[in-house]
Image (tube, one colour):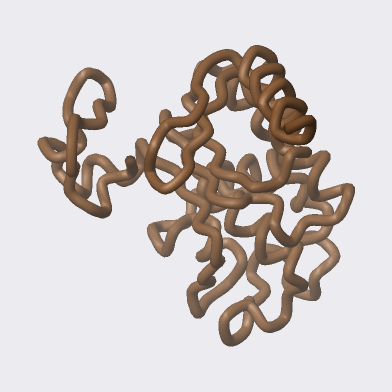
Length: 190
């Protein structure tokens, strides 16, 4: 979906253009991606949020604010200039997750893909994630959320349930959840 692997079937379009036809350098700012396993770069917090590009302080702060991480960053000895340490060793798991989310939101991309974004978050992190997704949606951004955790579904409009690469259910969140619950009830009574 984000253009890392070539399309197997069909195509993903961004602004009516297939991802495969986009110049990789031009495509990057339009896509925000939070992988399941956060990899932080050797550098400062600001460097990591800015995706190792030239740091635009306003964009860095906005991305951190969107994830609820701004105040925590200001408490570090060097603020945004604080080195993250080897593989982010100076940060907690939740802070690394939120820093990765800030990186995905940097520059206000049109497509944001979040793979298990709440895996290491506490309640405050979960609330910040939900708030960030709601703001992205309100701004007309496309957000794809890949999750196994039901709490994340509260911010979804549409659900696509896959099993072994096959679509089991697809449609509006409440309709799909009703179908899933009915299927579970049938399975439990059998």
